[in-house]
Image 1 (cartoon, one colour):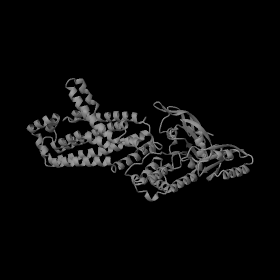
Image 2 (image 1 turned 60 degrees about the horizontal axis):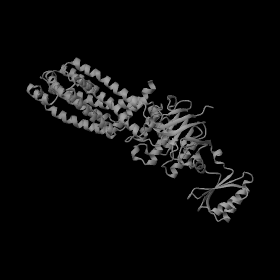
Image 3 (image 1 turned 45 degrees about the vertical axis):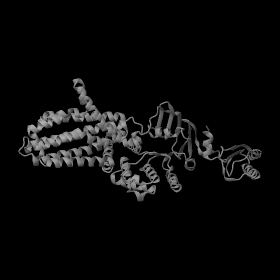
Image 4 (image 1 turned 180 degrees about the horizontal axis):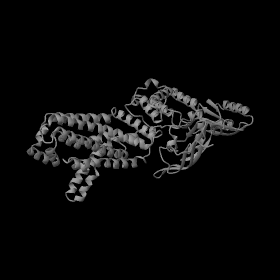
Length: 307
Length: 276
């Protein structure tokens, strides 16, 4: 099957700084794909190159078999750019109508399409207001709405929930979930909870290079790890007590102040091992706020991009 | 460019014109342009331009202003010529003000990111140019047509003031104002792509234009070759545009699209490679 996005030996330099350093990967159509990495990893540059906003210094990028922004991709690829501003002084519905017209809708249909996508992001009641009179969150939702005009097959979303309140962020996540059967999303985000809840696979980059590209299931090793969020830092004695538990293979403590504990164990007899780990914690007087089977994506990304 | 591309250009052009009427840039241009011409039309309505055909007054004016205008006043309807001369002189400033933000804001605000996923860069660049050229062109044409009307009402009995001559010369002058304005709009298409900031583009356009002309004027006294540099700007052909002879004037008008095409092409060369 032809990859929906294919990157070969991609390099992008800004003067002497190499933001992307020889990256290659292929993304298949289907479940949403997360693009994650720490600050300075080259995520924004990679996203910009994939969208065609920046040309690569060398290497090749293909989106649905074509270079980014190829005329054949118009209407098939949609983008939510993170920091692009709408025109001031114009009603948002008029602006979305323009975008729809540019995607081939006639004027009447374009107006209807603008209303439809504003409805998707629950902004139908402010359609007549101009962008500068809206809150940051509302402007963000308008920007998201424009990415859903028409029937794009591939949607690039850069930080789709950044700056949104929790309820709105949940609504946007639900919207993405409701549409992900019909199209492929590539989501770049620092919010790893969102990526974890929305995506089927993740591309992790660091220092301009590809660190991992795997399905979420493969990445998070759900069956042989327990992750605890603690009330207080675990003492050395508590760690030693956990390491002595039968079946436990490794105990990792989070960085200072993180109050996190990751306990790895052998796969056989997992339930009994978990009970023993909980008993050991109780005996050591370690209280926890949250326990998770497997590692969170955040833990894995931190582990993989540790500097 | 196929029909779909032209549909895109048409949609962007309409939107651009509409937003120009609502944004500070467009409103500022319309207010300044309107006030400027309201002042001059009120002045000219008194019929004072008729007196400018008097050779004694003309000699004094020629010392202060452009000697070519004095010659023109002897052959053409005076109110029309005065309007035309004021219009030509003010065109660079108004066109630069109106057209300073063609692709500059698209690049700084990254609004272009919303567009280029849907249309080609050239369509955006062309539509922005057409939007600004329409705004300036309509305003210039309105001035030209108003000048014809004023002249028909006031210049009867003056040299060159008969109806046929006034209409013929007036329409040519109107075309000249539109073409001259379009050349400066194209200049700003280039500058806005280079400078990527509407206000700085306007300042660079105005200051650059003034300094260039001062330097060329000073240097051309020493070397006629340097004087040829004035033809780098459309105003280099102002002598032809102000010629009483319609043939010379036509040459000045016909040359304007070449200036516009050259600036437009240079701007496109820069804009097409800009990171967005």
